[in-house]
Length: 331
Ligand SMILES: NC(=O)c1ccc[n+]([C@@H]2O[C@H](COP(=O)([O-])OP(=O)(O)OC[C@H]3O[C@@H](n4cnc5c(N)ncnc54)[C@H](O)[C@@H]3O)[C@@H](O)[C@H]2O)c1
Image 1 (cartoon, rainbow, N blue to C red):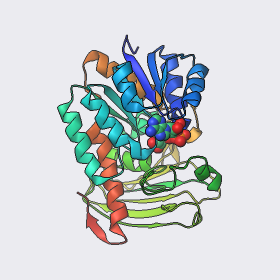
Image 2 (cartoon, helix red, strand yellow):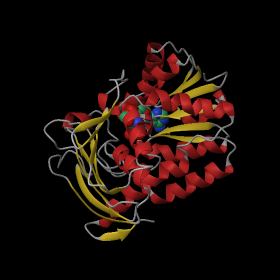
Image 3 (spheres, rainbow, N blue to C red):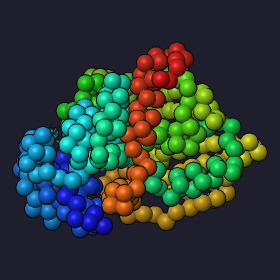
Image 4 (cartoon, rainbow, N blue to C red):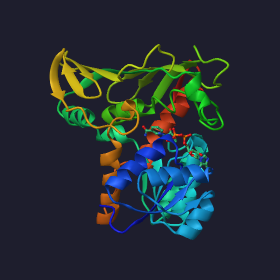
């Protein structure tokens, strides 16, 4: 499936496992692993049957291993510099979300993508989930007049204390919005188009003293094909399924859940429970997304979730942080 492409993976933490699991099933040619914890990288590689050499330094790995493709699975603040370094060398990049965390990084990444011969893909894997694909198709012939997305999850101090980069503005770039809720906001964008303005409020309700970023956010967006609201929290007692609701022009209410779509409480679509790698909340989208990324490269086709697509949700989230309860334009 990945042909003879030479693959490297940087960041062998939680999500690095998921990428290696898919690459192992694809019988990919993994030629380099990279992590500042080189022993961990070697051990994680071995777990998936890869005995590729390990580098502790990303730029050195790019120069010496000369991969064709690199999967970027590192903390948020490293995404933009790593994406740009790889694209400048003509190395195809599959970057975990978020594409970046600072406004100026968006332009720098898009410029590097435009100047490169290589492909940039962003891991917004929920776009590959069957229920989400069903809604995307359904909305082509059914008009929504409003929507609401809700992410009600539980993340506690133990979660944040597992990795020093989490919970800080300079390394995570935000809290629940730029990390846990990004996928749901991306789906709303994908379904309804880009809003032009937002009014948002963020708060830290239960993780004060643990994280400096927000654990809860609410927002109202205008200017897309239908206005939508959003609520996300990491401070719920338990994690509940993500939900997006649509009021349709004909008065119907659609409810999109991870594996099904309801129309006025009747099942309109339902997908079989997939085999999920990693946490259930990641869904099963990494498998089809990664395979599609390699397929597009090997067939010379454009990968649909490129830098432009990955940047859309970043612009929204950065505007939410800037809004501070005032309606502002999304640039
Ligand atoms: N798509 C999804 O649904 C999904 C799910 C989980 C995580 N993620 C994303 O994956 C990324 C990683 O998250 P995680 O939970 O795996 O984090 P993690 O902390 O478990 O793993 C990050 C890894 O990067 C390594 N690392 C740190 N600095 C490095 C450097 N300079 N060079 C090389 N390696 C370095 C760390 O040692 C660690 O092994 C984040 O962007 C996160 O948002 C995406």
